[in-house]
Length: 265
Image (tube, one colour):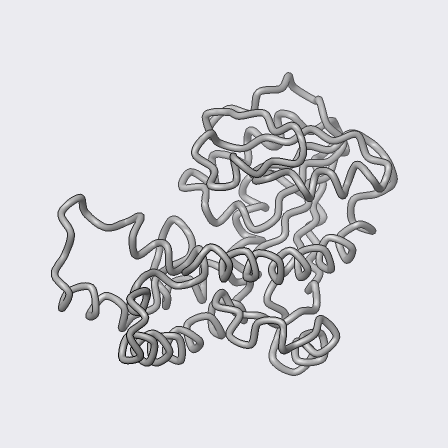
């Protein structure tokens, strides 16, 4: 992907995330101290601060957004949250938990830094997102071959999403043959830390996440579809407005689900 294409992709994605975060605001309560986990560039932390929250943001040093931060982001080791017990009224994340390999154990850290009665709100990719991203992988392959035939040397490289970059980040140090790279592209790559494109249909489902949160000790777990349809490839880009994606979500499923839960008092 060229730098210009990546900027355009990220601009579209940010517009979708802005709409989703507005949908989550009622779940966060009013005011209070918020911790954002996996804050990336920090623009969501900045958005929450503009809504009257006191916000702290953390992310790992290896974040690909490290160079484009717009908010103070504290770097940590990805294991222990660098704050004392009972520091926050709300812990928030957006499309992060699926990238944490020790996600079940990490719930204990979230509970530790929440005050009694505090809430955790996580936006997560859904079953629908995984389904439509898998189906969108194949039109993307056709497009890459067409670009290659037209002389575009970026054809058959990693696609425009975090999903597609998994093809390169998970690859061995020795560069595989062209045949092996082409064969690997025939199956859509996984998005999270575990599973496959098929297994993630369960891993991203509501029953799976609710079960995980309940085992961790959270209570009153509620889910809210955030009401937009998109795939990891954003096949139609900005040809589909937010309003159109909202209408499609009512028919084909929301690509993101917000989970809200409470720590016992």
